[in-house]
Every structure is written in C-alpha cells, then in structure tokens.
Length: 136
Image (cartoon, rainbow, N blue to C red; front, side):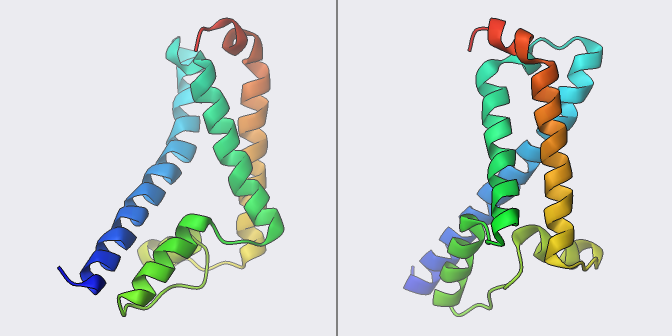
C-alpha cells in the first residue's frame, strides 16, 4: 500500500467520522424531540445529552469564529497529500452542494447552526431536571 493510498484511506475514515458526527447532531436532536413525546427514557441519559449539547456548541462556535471544522481540515490535508483536490468550504457546504446542488454564503450556515444550537439548548434546559436525576 502506497503512501497516497494510506492518506486516502485516512481521509475516507475522517469523512465517515464526520458523517457520523453530523448524524449524531441532527438525528440525535430529532430522536430527543420524538422521544420526549413517545416516552423514551433513554433520551434523558445525562452523558448523551451533555455530549450532544457540547457537539452542537462546538459547531456553533466554529461558525461564529469563521473557522472550518478540524475534521474538514484534516481530511483536506490528507486528500492533498494523496494528490486529490481538497474543498475550501465547510463540510456541510461542500456536501450540500454535491448532493443537492445548494449553495449559500457561509453566514447562512452560521445562522442555521446558531438556531439549531439554540433549539438543542432549549430542549436541554426543558429536560434538565430529568437529565440530572437520570444516572449516567
């Protein structure tokens, strides 16, 4: 296996981790909201909710600072080392454009991330007593 192949493999691994992170952030919130209405008790697991809130806060902070996600940066470095083209925009911007042909300015994503982060924060505050009482 060549150095380029190893770099591509690592870049693809980072891409998978990034997709899983996005799924955790987005679908985790959907499951939390749905679970509240259908009575799932696992949605009040303290470690899960704190991890989810921290993940969203990290995304929002990066958007406010105008920074790319470290996973995007690492993936791009590895792809460049392997001779592949890297993307300059954020992970979400890149893949939305690739999958949906949707293009927006970076500030739009910052606003969306901030609104989403506020919703996660509100859901956490609303559930805080049950989260705190639930063993981790």
